[in-house]
Image 1 (cartoon, rainbow, N blue to C red):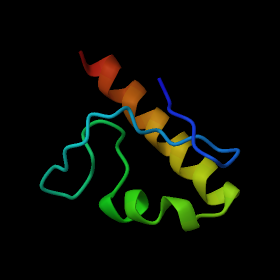
Image 2: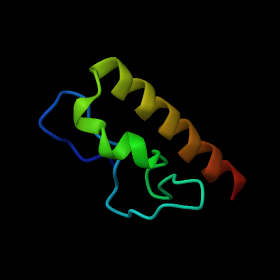
Image 3: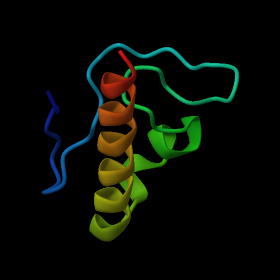
Image 4: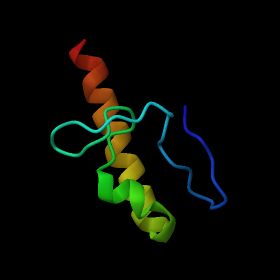
Amino acid sequence: MFVGNNNRVITPCIGQCHLDISNVCTGCYRTSSEITTWIDKSEDEKIAIVIRCKKHIEAKRSEN
């Protein structure tokens, strides 16, 4: 589900990028800012983002 990059923490990007009206990607649930600054984030910041995104994905799944 998650695509790796050259860092140890993997991006939650699933290659289905589309920003909603709140500038949140409907594929991975990162904000546009989180997407564009991903490479500059610390590992701890990336982990926090991935955890938040996974929680959002699970919440969406449980709605359906």
